[in-house]
Image (cartoon, rainbow, N blue to C red):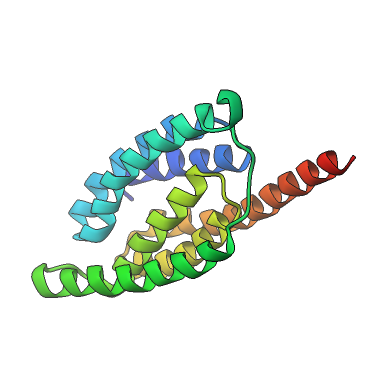
Length: 192
């Protein structure tokens, strides 16, 4: 097992655990993880995943800023739900993005598993953006990503990363529960 990959996986676990707790330290921890995974995915020829990590750097910085200053009066924002329009928009973006990126990777690179890799990439971008905005349904997108990613990483023999995503799957489920409770507690407080 590659110690570099194990280190990235450990930072990933810590990052997601901190996100569930809505702890601002999830963002710098996530920056370390995604930086390490740029190298790992390049070596595995999972170019969509590698490119995703580069975009994650930007989204990590954005999430860090938004969680610090994005709420009312520069307060941390609350967890919210996806709008009706969002329920139409994001699945359409996921399908179109997967088709375009998968085709591009299949046609113009030597990428392995171009369409599944593209699906996890596009869905991860959507999930990361929704998470940065503290939208509950980000966890549903992460659950889908985790299921797909486990299969990809097992196929590529990236066993520590496959285990990481299996744990991410459990954590995403816990995150969905915790953030749902956060919304319910805020609603109960507002109603009182």
